[in-house]
Image (tube, rainbow, N blue to C red; front, side, top):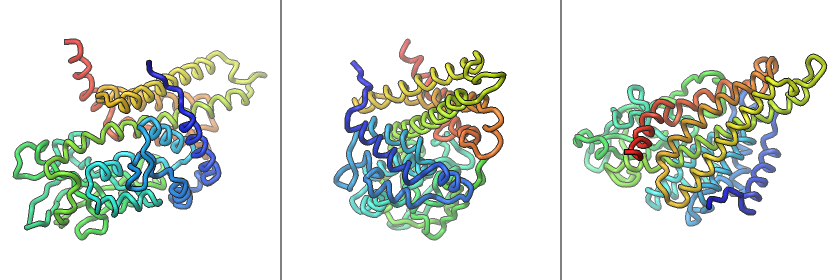
Length: 385
């Protein structure tokens, strides 16, 4: 029997995160961050001091070793109340775990402990200008010059590239014919000679407090000790972090849907037209009903995904389904919320108006809708052969 009720510890954690963020990230401060393109480092440091940045990381490195369900609930809460802080936390979910899982003690000391103390997470360099979701088609390569790897190529759509102290770069060894058996993860510090990072303009809020970047790697020289994990095992290591990345994606978008839904409900109960609250009109009620059903479905998918992952079950199919469904459903919820809010949703500085622009990328980032179908649907069909 699957029990999705939260434990007492999880309830206390959620309430503690909420209380801290309501104090450190009030609504006006969040709006100012987006207006000015400034990341709220003071609030992030407060998160670190409270021990929240280390959730899900091993105790021996200074983290708090909790299950994926708890990590997802934390990300959901941070995404609801923390504004731009969610980008740091959700990026840290896969990248900092990668360093803990595959890294050496020296790498953990250099990258993980500063993050837990309130530093930025590592960025992940996978997508390239000519190969987005086609990881196997990467062009970035490396060659050995003694014990020094010389990396050349470029990465695109790298989240937090301007803020991260280093980037986990996936590069291929051109001497190995099969890229799946020849890709390697490297930890490349942002100030390494030959690394150029440019912030890319984004649809909507170009001044968002966290960046999407292009990264150029021109004869970048790193020592053998910069390998993360095992040489030529980078593709498998990349696949291993997809579950955490999917859970980060899904829990984050659901938080956006819940915020938009609650704003729409509050407005429908307050706004009067034709002598009554607009929530009394059946067409508005239909939108509220549709939004509520989608949120319930999304939450159940997230809980089941986390529960199965924590049981050690293979969740590749469910993770793909959840990423696909929740990204689309959240876009639909936000669209309906805008329809309920009407004018105030599209004029001025309402957060649902920002959601409407920003959430569209959820159907592309971390694997597009079409890639989720391409990778997942054949596995579903295989069950019935």
